[in-house]
Length: 148
Image 1 (cartoon, rainbow, N blue to C red):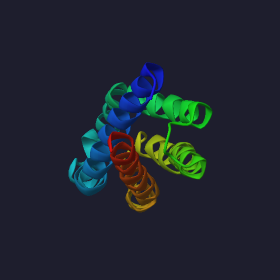
Image 2 (cartoon, rainbow, N blue to C red):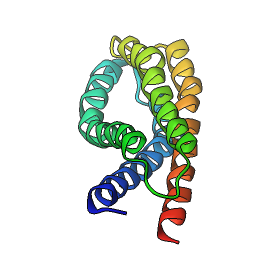
Image 3 (spheres, helix red, strand yellow):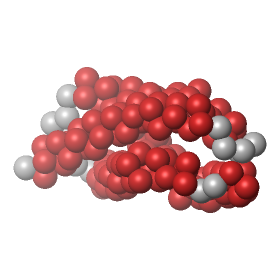
């Protein structure tokens, strides 16, 4: 594997596995605890949560998206192109879910706690949790194939 493809792969693996950890923490701990914040301070909490979380997740999400696209172009040796396309498709699932399911609920919660919006956020976030988990498994499988 050439140096460029190796750098893309390492960046991809790091970003994907970082996001797998983040999404499981959010799914199991963080989102479920939203209802414990309390009504009077929830809007301020939700605004701060969204703003600060963007600083943590935007860079690795952009790295993951970019490297998933580059993989389809560079085609690392020993990795079937179908796996690369499935990986890119899962990135699309994550981004589409975020844009159409989670972000609108965060916007609603930014106005104040809403039990229905909270329940939908927790339930719909399983889409991203599962997609990222599958991507993480695929990335580890690719690492095993590449390092073998």
